Image (cartoon, rainbow, N blue to C red):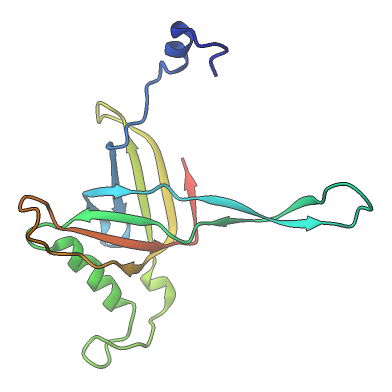
Length: 172
């Protein structure tokens, strides 16, 4: 961390460069798919605390109990002309349930068959290396949010946002 606001210290501190928000890719281990995502959030972590209030005086002490993860991971995609990204998630949904009643059963299949690893790779400016990878384990699509057609903006692309559930993630 720079010790002052001198330009020389700041440029030295950031000599490795910055991570740009528009340099990333999202891939899924399920069928080895990579789609062009227009937006993706980095997962949140939190610690659940237990307030220890047994001391006779003073503030309570927060004792860490466990690590938790935000249960939302939103990814937005631009929908291609052949709707491949929407079909991918629709087929994933259908695979999560048994094929009774014309593929629309509410009987859930075995959990491990429906999970995927999702990798979000932060790409360098020159696109020759990966700066960091967020890997979400035991991920699955929890919610396919509605896409909306509109005549208001004629040159706008249709987007698809998917809310992914996951067990945990790692940053490498």
